[in-house]
Image 1 (cartoon, rainbow, N blue to C red):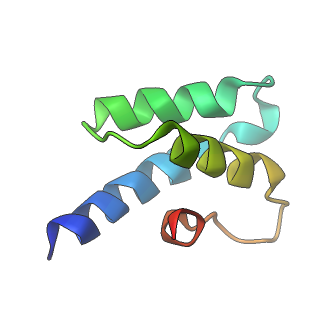
Image 2 (cartoon, rainbow, N blue to C red):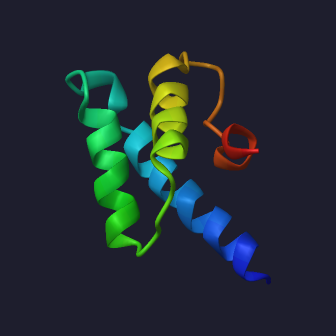
Length: 74
């Protein structure tokens, strides 16, 4: 597995974790939790990427399936 694939999988794990409780989260919590989770995983993403992931999570509707980090970041 390449380093890029490993990073994408790690980012996806953080996105999945944050997505699981985002519906009941107060405004701004999703981005804060993404940053926290990425930091805990030792991942460094540009601010624009973190914001894009947070927006994708917040705008996802039930039944859309999980947010795919690789798609959002591509």
